Amino acid sequence: MTEISQDAPLRGRIALVTGASRGIGRAVALGLAKAGAHVVITARTVGALESLDDEIQAAGGAATLLQLDLKKGDRIDQLGPTLFQRWQHLDILVGNAGILGPLSPLGHTTEDGFLSTIDTNLNANWRLIRTLDPLLKRSDAGRAIFVTSGAASGKYAYWGAYSASKAGLEALVKTWAEELTNTPVRANLINPGATRTHMRAKAFPGEDAALLPAPEDLVPLFLELASPHCKRNGEVINFRDWRGSHHAGIHTDTSIANADV
Image (tube, rainbow, N blue to C red; front, side):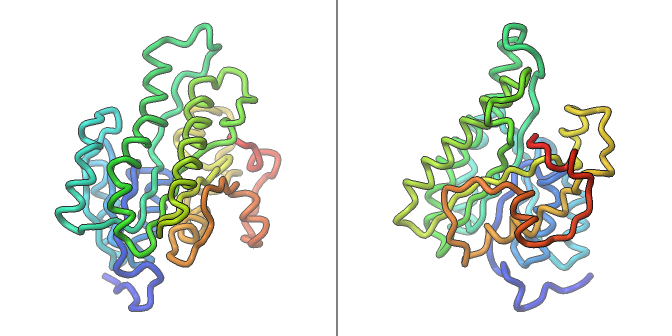
């Protein structure tokens, strides 16, 4: 097992990542751990997190596994008190978990499909904010990062439930960010754009995933926003724009990789 460097940028900080069992959440959780944070990794089943825990330990990091189904509001509400008992504060929150929901005309979308998407992508994040806001404010530099989508613009036919959930999430986090102005906490959103994930493959089954950025490519942006030195607040950062400004050198087919959703 390797050792985390004493000068690791997030050494000693406590982070929580939702939807950490695969995709962007998994990559970000591993990246935070390698940067020195103790990461609370959550998913609907603990078993799905075990291989990530092994990888974090192999890299010299530390994690706590936590079963969390975002459709169960009472479980989310217990999260703040549970973390307080152990650490008394939280430094980093990554609200990554989400579902695609039904892709169909709004007139054909079922009530269950619509409400499930809103509950998971929007309402659950409000509950996370409500239960974790006090803990983030106990940090010297609390940082919250949520994952949005270009679909929040509402310009994609048949994406109604998902679009509404992400538009609501953006409004929610921006409102919270305004409320945080005079506190040590900062809250932002990342729009990953087209990324090589299971959700993307489900939405675009005929697409060549090899041409898309990998979830790991987004990790430096998450680490930047998680840093105590980051002063950005209430912003939506588009990964492809950030990547271009940082000359990341990720070579992809831009006609696909620059798609918003």
